Image (cartoon, rainbow, N blue to C red; front, top):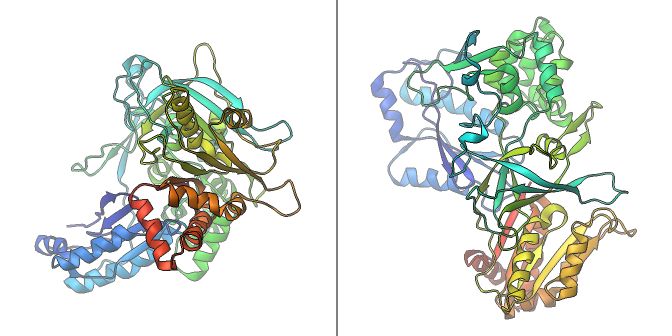
Length: 547
């Protein structure tokens, strides 16, 4: 039998892969295949910017050994902060020969490309049976039924879309409000809202033109594995245009396995060798991929443009490219104040690449043009629950650290605390550390925050990094306010919340907290670390960060 199976088991933030086999043509008896289930082969997907890097993968590997599994090859750990696919391929290339040697299997040589889906082009499908862009099960607004989730998002009307940056700012940050009245959707301050985006129509048109395909051709891609539970890679039947617009990721950097498959479509031998080299595990190939794809930030459209002899079959391209994923945003409102709407705060992503092209964020560029209209402008959304929560007792003091759009969930927190205060409840100190470049350009929600300060709800510390010769960040303010921090987390058993950049800001804040506990709490370094760890366990120290 041919083995080309990977079993995926999602666990919390890590994705543990118990490898039963890989895409290699090998003939194995059923007895030998069954014995694979008693062996230990683990590859974990993680990110080193997180504290518990690949902890679940390491634990599963350890437990399998405890339970008597036989190790065939060492545990592999992938780092998404670097190049996770490179980590996997490097591990796989050593793993599979070890498996063949362990089971006495003779390999069939190099990996063989096997198409997973069969193409059918339609000419007579009724229009009402063709998917035209709505996500998942949706065909029209009439069919919407709760509960709403990833497979059944709610088409929410845009109530508000206003600019948060000042007129002199060269960037753009949007405050958007989605109408959820009548949807029965519920959210809490600190939750996330997922937004399903739509790809830029110009990029879609370029792909159709380069591949010389009529984008309005209606197709179905059907899984050739009859036992698979995934019949189609995306809702079918649909047109190529719909697939490329709503379901396929055409703006991220393609992985090496995509380049390897595309190489076969090059009519120029030099182009073919270049793509095959970048898809290889050689030092030269890795360096070229890192420079040409990653550093110069080429997406599939750029690659098709820069390699003129590359004319792939569009159905194969649709199969190879990953699905277009929803984007998650911290909700920047409280249901206590806004029960029928969900607010988000999003910077419009736009930057120039080393090749001179202008890359734009898929979701924020699309949302930028979504304004209140009649008929309404709709966006597919759903709510993802979070553990980022205010303390149950309003008297508990809190410190929030949220520079830039990291302020988003804290706007909801402040609204909630202000509502409680107006209801006559005793509310503890609500302290916010906010930072941006310039007070007149990107001081998000300035009027609101200053009003909360004036009313006594909020204590605000601000850092404007570019208003003086030496840059000042929120971390500098925290360093100066160690007494205030210790008063909250030490004397008053308060909570600390961090939202924003995981790679630098969150790590620096964590180190400052350790220093505060050590200095003000008169503890050793180990005792301080234990104190912070206990705060995490008690959910008194929470982070909502991204890299």
